[in-house]
Amino acid sequence: MAGTLTQAPPRGLPWSRRLARPAKGAAGILLFLAAWQISVPLVGLEPYFYPGPADVWTAFVDLMRKGILPVYTVDSLSRYSAGVGIGIVAGVFFGVLIGLNAFASRLLSPTINFLFAIVEVAWIPIFVIWWGYGYKTILIALTYVVFFPVLYNTLIGVRTVPQPLINAVRALGGTRAQVLTHVILPAALPGIITGLRVGAGFAFRGLIFAEIVAAKTGLGYLIFEGAQSHQTARTIVGMISVGVIWLLIDQFYLKPIERATIERWGLVTDAEQRA
Image (spheres, rainbow, N blue to C red):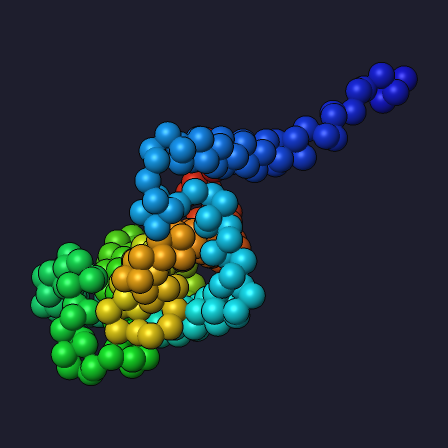
């Protein structure tokens, strides 16, 4: 029968594709570490100036044994989570509120564009002058860093919703709340997700700089303190920790949100997902 002659597609192919990218990434990391280790004797500099992978590993073990790295990592993540959470909620709220009012949108858009364009680290020294060193300054800085990208992209998303869609819902008897929840917010969500991703990235960079300037704990402080005390291996441990944490945030926080929204709606092509 025809059904018995049909060959089932190979089941291992999807798993091989899933494993191919991590395997390539791991191979690239190993190649980089090998080149780094080989370069150490060739450069011939002192370990405090140019440490090798072995020196960095020793510093990592020491920081873990003393409990410094886990505590600093938790401190950084708690500051980051609080700042990003407040910034997202405030940015979406005011973005929708301003976007629904054409006059307010025209009035405030130039100011929002201006503030959005200012590099986030430029504000941190001013925040230190206003609020001093410590958690409060870092939280305000991170909230600011997240707020304006989310506000800007939410405002654009709300203002670009096609008017015929809004008119169609109103013609069918939809209330203003139904127009907001069933038309405006879903249509603006890709813009909101874009603002969330941009804000989350800016906040992570701002966190490290803020901890260098205004904190006595955290990964940013670890990077700065290691450089100040000529413990370069510790500085590199902090830098690697920052990179690993960002990869985890991107993989387990940002990408699932994208898959649940803009990728699900077909706004990201297969080629872009494979890139």
